[in-house]
Length: 523
Ligand code: GDP
Image (tube, rainbow, N blue to C red; front, side, top):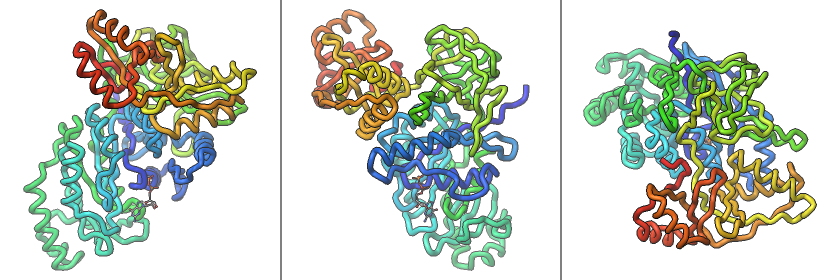
């Protein structure tokens, strides 16, 4: 069998650390784009919802920014884009379920930041390999050792420096690549030239002194001596299990250190891995086709209410015009135009293999987490919804548009923009979101795409968790005693709504036989 050389990954970072810049430089190396400025930033620096929607629309039109594919050396690389705004972090978490590894970008001035911490936690939970790039070394930032210590302590991962900076900020001279045994000199011209790279395998060689000066050369030797004693050698198995992260230093905006990172990345990053399903583990080399939907992107043009469902291929080969089983409904699904994504274009493909992401034109068939197979009833695990922090009732203000209102809300729920809950006793419907900006998006999209005007009314819940009990009697007792706080989600799973975190914690103590989950993936 031919080895599958797909490299499917996502970049994780805190906003402003340099994700967009990094993506662009990687695409430039891959020859996928030819000029800077081609990658649109997912940032919402502008504050109003219509600015945000306008930006999403632009991104929707150039939907290829959701997945950017290119060839590099012998690998087909797929970068999966993740939304920059924290209020849409659910989207990012789900994208992480579709990748085989991640690239973490850290700002050397700010160090480990909040979103990086959260995203890294998910990677650690899922045992996803992480390669780290410490960015902005052209600025006066934290010391490299301090940064490594911070990464190790805060992200609970062993660090293994693969390059080492010479100077920093104004005095930044370059990096020594421990991986390739080369010195790469920094010149802030945005292009890294071959003449800036010197093979120096023997650190005691005089060439080092000639290139960076006697005192810097001496300092570098001492530092390298120290770090090789303090930090472990690169261990591929530990990297693959997510326990060790190789670390590179550089400056994305100056295109510095990116090629070294990319070259190492394509050497060490894993190909398509296996995926856990409810009943068994599905391996990429299995012949029958399987895949799951991890993201649905609405076409934000109100005249075309179609959507693109993004599917990760897990096993087998997907063929166009072949009828597969849509496991949730048991119906057949066939498409004549599955789409693959290159950096700036999308093309209809005939086939797709594990590691590939394809776009399926969708008129309402798919929900997030849906599976296509050749008949086997497979449900992949770990494609979560997150317990919302914000709850509202939604009131339709225009009775004549009731149908559109309901349809719109259902569709937004299928896309994962909102979660809908039905209280078990009163049958009252509530919506739940993770971030406040999502509420604005719901209102805006209901109006613009469905012509439905709605308002939100507050409810007395601030947090929630899914509940589960091995014994039915325990669950029944809990439901009976907390009726007004229990609702069902769209999958029919029970969720407990609490007025405060404190109340939730007390309930957890009071009902020992129950299990509580903050993601809907009840395992
Ligand atoms: P994102 O929010 O993570 O996508 O970050 P961007 O890629 O948009 O970068 C945020 C800001 O940092 C932009 O103004 C970039 O020009 C700047 N930036 C990115 N990389 C570097 C770098 O290596 N050095 C410096 N000084 N600035 C950088």
